Image (cartoon, rainbow, N blue to C red):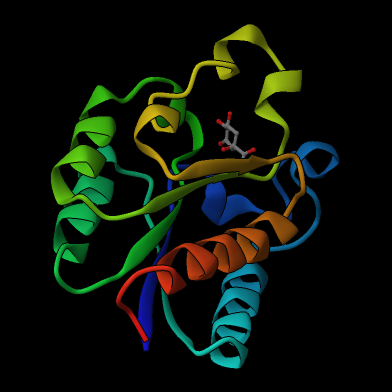
Length: 149
Ligand code: DQA
């Protein structure tokens, strides 16, 4: 059984009411429920965590080492600023799929830069809440090439 962590960063607790024209009307609870349900159907044990704090994201990434097989990460605005998050991902050597609801490359220039992308398995952006499901499938396909059953 694959153990997957879905990790969401700052302001994503406000999904559903936060700029719905950009991020959609799906709430974080709905996203997390969909991830857990999709995981069950695909033989993945999915756990979810959201925090507005950079250090808490780093703590979660560290704690995932040896416990999880991979991470789905939407680091929110820390994506564009946090070398510490990038270093945390490099340190644990776990596959990370970077997710954004919006297409960050079609938005303001400061959102084009991702510190996560160079250390991620890949990036999925622009597909709204569906991106998390796509990310789970991508991670499963990646892990299925390895040892995990
Ligand atoms: C986001 C994109 C980021 O630029 C922004 O700061 C967010 C959400 C997204 O999911 O589209 O908080 O990560």
